[in-house]
Image (cartoon, rainbow, N blue to C red):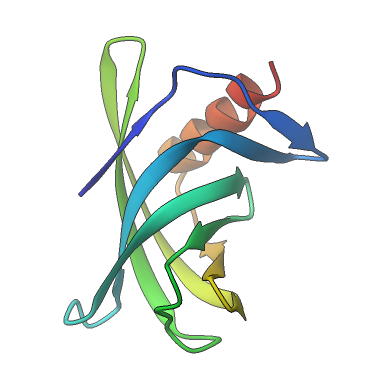
Length: 116
C-alpha cells in the first residue's frame, strides 16, 4: 500500500498534474503475484506515469493500482484497474480503466490541487 501526501504544489500541462513531490506507489499485476514499486511522477484523469527503476510489466499488461491518499488530515483509498500503456527505460505509463465515480472524483481533486 502506498501513501500519497499532498503538501506541495505542482505544475499542470493540460489535464495532467506534473507532481513535484515524490509519490511512492505499488502496482500489482492482475494475478496479484507480481508487484512493482516506484515513484509517481505525474497523474491525470486518464492515467499516471511511474518511475520503477527499470523494472517493468509488458505493454497491455493489466495491473491493479492501490494507493492511500492523505489529504488535509483525511485518508482516501484509490484503487484502479489499469493497463500498461507505455514503457520507458526507467518506468511505465498506466491508463486507468473504468474508474468508479469515487476514484474519478479523487483523481480530479488531485489534478486540481496540483494546478495551484
